[in-house]
Image (cartoon, rainbow, N blue to C red):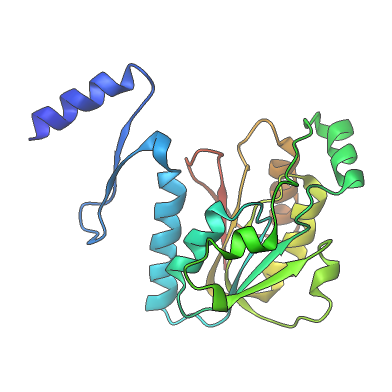
Length: 220
């Protein structure tokens, strides 16, 4: 069986497809094609949610930068007992923030406006747990004093990542996690700069992970 697995894997690798296997001791062990799913990111989310549950970490969960809800639906599924705050303009990047990253980091414009709250809500396994916060961040946090056990920040640009870390990290519970997307993505160099600057200023460690877009994990 191992011989067939390795042989088939080598054959697929010639066309840049790979079989990715999870941890052998994990009862949720899965084998997936890399191109079908950002497996590393999703599996680490699953493992972190298990640690949060095991350690009985209090607080809500959140995502800053939702777009069509690809990662949000995974968050909602692995936290079936947590209120889930979803922050997004649901109309794409703020023009001034985009122009700033274009000037400083050479970031190319991408359109993320083809989404709606209802489209995302329909993808959620537990939609009743979802609280949508539409608008410019951090203005959409003015009525909030929540604590968080898990946060995903996926906003690509320098300013919104700094704003996200400034808001969420002080409110992150002990043994909680923040995932920041695109840390090692050369298309969004502002993301890496924002994380490093924030962590250096606040004496915080971080761990890069080898997912499709090079995320980084910050914990407390």
